[in-house]
Image (cartoon, rainbow, N blue to C red; front, side, top):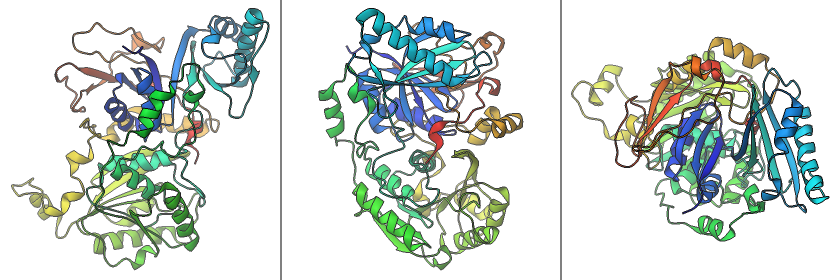
Length: 518
């Protein structure tokens, strides 16, 4: 049986539960949700699959040593205790990435320097030689994360952030992060059961991610390399088998339709789509949204219109007013999902959203809203949905509420995202986030974690434990199972039974993540 070990998958804020579902579907165990991360256990195959298949992961880290320290000298002594020849041959290069959230350490670069010194001195003392440091594309990426006095040394199995899929040839100003685009689509529950429309497609990120989801093509298929391919214990035969396995790919009988007002944007989108090998599934045209007079049926619409921040608009509120007017008159039977930044923009749409959730687009705290578009009054629509004795109309093929909240294959149901956001993100925290230094990085965020307990097994020893954990007992409980979660009750489904405890906001870090960039 393969050796199992702990891992940490980083993601964007708001996509944690989607990522947890992806990991469980790949065979991960002991899932624990934190802020912008999910920890789990698995073997080498799970690590390779997590890098290759996870659409909402930014990077996968493998912790190798935990210790406590309150000064850089202690860090140096503890790092010297690791048997570094297991991970780093003398003829290979390495780089250190430090992530600090502690009052005892006020300079992350100094911690990185002391960690580097410890590794170099370890080799000199033991072998009279030393490996070289290389900032760009080293053979081994080493991460040290410090939360208060808890320190974790990890090796990074991804290298470049996993949002860099490898298909992007060019981009317009302010392109959508690929991980965010995939997460937005997965939040809707759409898997290719209808047409997909993005009427402000820019460089085509949403269209490409949608087509890859519909066809179930792995997001890592176009990447040139992953960091684990340079590890000492890299299993080339195992990864080749994962890379060449097309058994999970499926047919897509509908189309993805994209348009934009800019010819330049459409030209760039065309190159990116061609690079991704998806020309057969995506239609593009230069067309302002106000010129839409019909929509392919059945369908779903997902769009990321300008916010007036990175991309300016001469009449921003007028733009959103026009969006609402076109949605009401052209896209009947659709569910329209819109990501935007300002409440006044949403107000101009003039429609009542059926769902709202918070997502981060770069450094902007945005809202993602769903509008169910139907003819007649709201009362008539509810009656048609069966809330007053009727049946769901046929146009709901784009994915009903239960389907939309399910994870691929695992069938999980998440609880309401706005409640999760409120619990983890207070107004106090908003102010601190705004004042925080830009682009500060966090590995696992300052989180108290409780292990998920498989049925019949003894509890797993706690990891990444925070010193304040004993004083915080009122945790919001969630359940994980092979077929679902979100009803706050433990469920028995045979061999696997999981429980996740989400943590109060005081245990979350207030920093920004370096992987939020485009």
